[in-house]
Image (cartoon, rainbow, N blue to C red; front, side):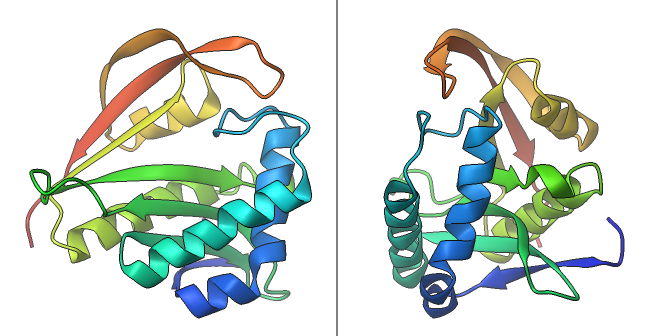
Length: 179
């Protein structure tokens, strides 16, 4: 990652005040065809409602929200979440969700930086295992493999792309050393 951006944790009150900026990142990624749980066209109101739920989850301690920002402008360039609010028989693990990087900010190391920060946040929360899923054959899949994530397997037709086409999904895990 270059020095023009920084990654940091965002609290619930700041997330609330930056709903519009967070929604813009999500809208950009869905417009680009990212399969991140939303269908195209994604309305801004729906994207903003999603981020309000995220902010509530941060306030409840159920998730960590990390953002990558341009140091000069403060513009949010990317984001990732660490989901901590899992069933009581899984206190050792967390899910990584919604790793998003604006099209204009890709290929600068932000995705890798966000993923490293997510692992650090999970370790800080006492987690020793992370899991995630991504579109099979995507740039994200290659990124996760390069960062040492272990590929579990592929579920054919697991999700839909924003245009409605089915896509295969690859599942990964990453063991985290304690401490």
